[in-house]
Image (cartoon, rainbow, N blue to C red; front, side):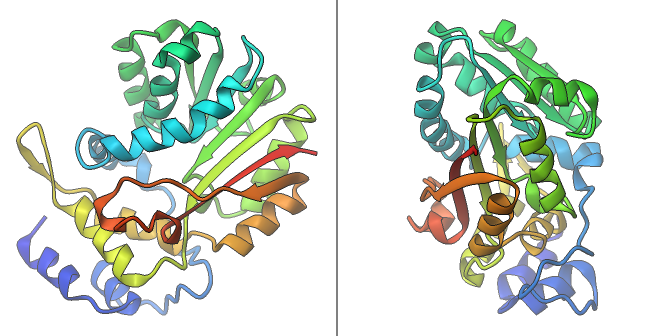
Length: 277
């Protein structure tokens, strides 16, 4: 990434300046979801690999926080239950959970899926190197595919992390979850917020466009990063979508170890716990 672009992003004072810098002159306003922002960013193999690299550097502690958030939800399930993750990406969350000694002792089944061929390939690479590969399975697909629906039909806990913002019709996606999940199954949803304070968004953005992994300087796509927030929901919007789909939910303040959040992670992301009514 050019130094000039980084300097331009550092100088941005509002969303309109960021969108003009990254996407050109478009009338985009974060007061509503921007569905014209790109949604297929992870079809690009380079972007998928760079996203995975984020979790080898700045976001190691961030992922560990999410594992600690989710682990008690899993341990509350009966041994041998199925835990599924939609949009599993490079598979790091499921593998970290499966390798936890307490979790591993209870022989849970973990299944994740992602529509991106490259994300699926990365997840399989990580699974092969994992100390607990036998309990984790990855699929390439979406909830419209029969193999994924079969997994949902036996799922006790469904995890969804930063997935719904990439889906144009998130309401229909959540209805599919409810259609295939057993009654009483649990739900954990965590998403970035479109109403994030601008300066906090900019700090998060600049963290990702300047990262060093194994001594090599890399840069995650600022367009992909910004698109996630442009396409995101506010808490009332997402709460309404989940409730209308048939989930009983409650807010769960998210933890965040990102330095850019300055201990105010709840302003950048939202989390909900629920169950299929």
